[in-house]
Image (cartoon, rainbow, N blue to C red):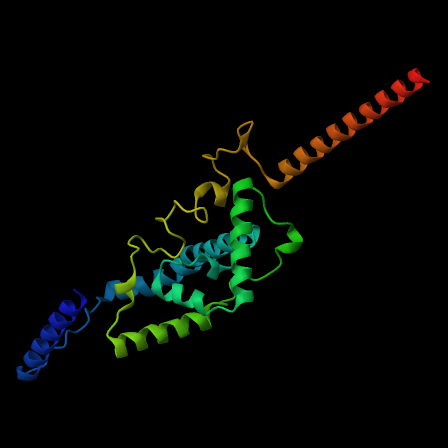
Length: 234
């Protein structure tokens, strides 16, 4: 099937070249011209739009993404889908230490997300947007292009997976644990609730403190009971 598509593409390309060569005049569509009123409105409103609306919105989106990545100890390159052929090849090119660190970050982020907890603040002081996968992605692109040119093999021909490749996981947007609404904003919908509120780091710390106090109290009661029994036996 891939060979058939390649041959059809060659036919269309040759037909297009033949028409272009035989045409007496080359038609180049000109961009639409704006009127004076539209140019004046654009020059007056676009700076205001980018300064007070688009710019703050983009900065807010970047800040939210950075906060979420730091809360869960993830890097931005950890969010790419391993079902995409280029990234799958890049993962194969990773050194063992980088590959193990990526796997541990993902497992830790999954565990913290399940418990509705965050990393300690002193562990969140890092830049999550360092593109550590960039050189390996470029090498993967080069290898796949070389295989396609020399072997006539396209990267999608050996992929059995079919589905949405969003860059955030193997599900559609909004369904993966990295982009779900309760994780970003603490909204409802979580099975782990206590009194209608999500477990936060403060609530979890308070719960652990209560459990520790209760355990200490029971231990003291058990020790006092043992002392009374020893006194009664003597």
